Length: 129
Image (cartoon, rainbow, N blue to C red; front, side, top):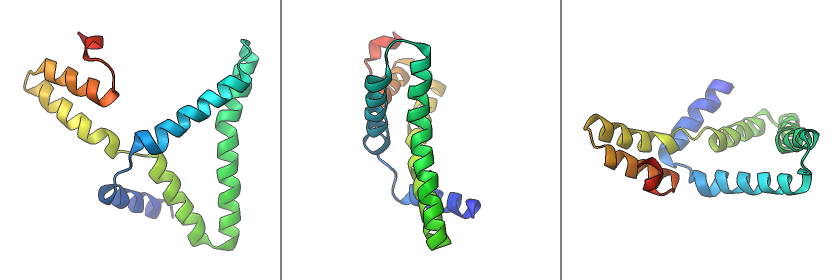
């Protein structure tokens, strides 16, 4: 079942690449900010609690949803697998950028490679100058 999930995600990703920044990165940043705002009191134990909430709570919720869907139908559980993999893998979000940067470096165009990295990471080019 896992192999079929991976194959399905690779096919879906080729047909419909995920807008990673909007769909995954922004909500995760907001979740991290919320957990930090609620749990950061300056002590290491608070950081451990925040990390546990930020990681284990979503994992436990997805696991519970998977168990529930699997009790209804294994196909529904498989669809959840595909959805979670689609959101978390995101190979295509890096491959195009990597190819362009790699090509610029091979051609000796360091400034172009820096500009491509800056555009990809949405930071000023001056950071690498």
